[in-house]
Length: 104
Image (cartoon, rainbow, N blue to C red):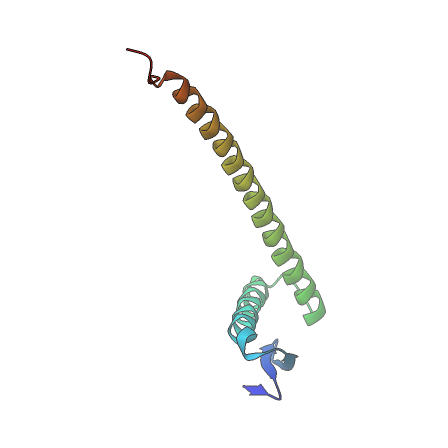
């Protein structure tokens, strides 16, 4: 499926050769499979006519998924940062409760 340092993928029954190194081959093929699955899903729904419209709708759906995941990831990062700050405050508070060498 590879030719001349490119990877051949099929989308809507057309073959495209994408310039990519061997280290990118698996990810590119997985991406093409994912796109193909989304296109078949939209096509089965029967509400989209024409390949151009089908591709545009698939691209919008995938972009929406990406942005939703990015937002969720940013929320997770913010939560982890808040937990880190809370841990630091708790650690500092606990240190004030530890006995000093001169106390009983």
